[in-house]
Image (tube, rainbow over all chains, first blue to last red; front, top):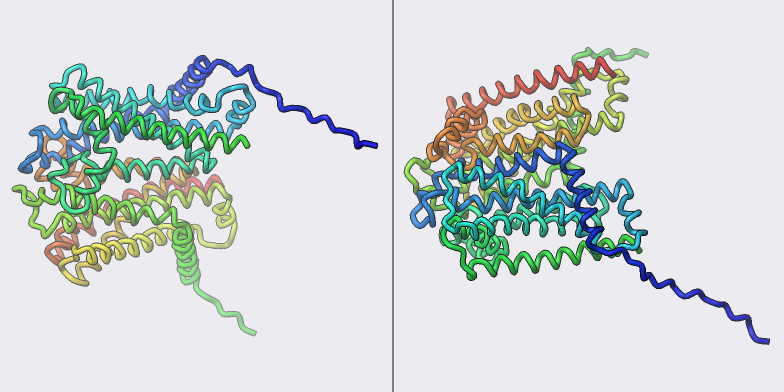
Length: 271
Length: 266
């Protein structure tokens, strides 16, 4: 007598995955609506860039008098630093949205929906990129009011926005990944520390040739230096490919790496 | 058998000391509360001293051996701000967890709860300042005036902690929210930046320079810096202590008002 064979049901192949683009748009809009409705999120997005550009140009005004400083207007040098600093904060806001969605279990509902996992991560990142327009514009307005010049013209302006939006996406991807890994909003502090540790030892405030000791070496190889050069070039002269591609490379590589990290954390969460 | 009667004043002091010790212990047990107070100022000092080393040769820059020596009071100010801000957050946590209500119902003195928390913040800030002075000394930027000057810097730091801690307590008690109390930190950070902490006001221009010159932090940092660089001077010590006490009087007044209102409610 042969043992009865157990018919195992084959796992159902999901064929009806929802098209990604409308979902991405809906998730991004949802994140943006929430951002606009909460004053405690809007106010720092405007106030932080104001503080950064005012403090960097006000406190260290005398630095531009050092022999060898590349410009006689400090604001032309530090505006890019203020853009990246404040855009990093805007990007970290994406992580806050993800943390909130984890707490209110919205993520759980998304995870049982027929969506591509990457879209769940891309929604907040799209919001971060759009949100970065605010601090970038605030810094630009204050910089111009403080006498900044933009000899790079429209291309230079485009580089400033590219740097700001790119930075927001990179920090957003990292933030989302860390929030998904740790599981709560406290993870944001880690990302803030990371942003600080990467951005400060760079050419944000002075060029490498004016630095001394260990910092000159760290700043030279710091990826933030390349991104700063790309973002800043329009303030110092015409836009060139040689100043553009290293920053672009940094943006692409770090977005892909941190984005993959975030998606992986999401997949781990769904197991 | 005879029961020993102790005066209420002695009991109040004992309770205050016990609560201050609890505050110090709690802070020490939570590295997240004190590690940034040491790491951030040191990191900023290391970066700025390498970035702005050549600025010390600019006309108008105070005579210093190095930028690291110049930035010592700024590092302490930053560390103390981080740390003293925790007093309000800790009080807010006590309110959220109900520990404050249990203390308020117990026969402990009402003022002991308040003073104990502040004394804890001031004690921890003194320890923090002493640690930073030693680290700077090891890094080649000692307090020039020796032990007396170093002690003066530590005393000023404790008083400053009372001032900053007072503001943070006022917010913590009034709101009962750790998030709201922590949101106060950027304001302190702005106050530190718009002062002579990181760069001399002589090299600033326009309204920013004027704002920095009347900032209480500048009025505390400048004499503290002179004590660290040139040695102990009674008038400098008097100025730093006087302004710190003035700031503390305002902030403690605000926090006491909030405290009394909270006690009436609980």
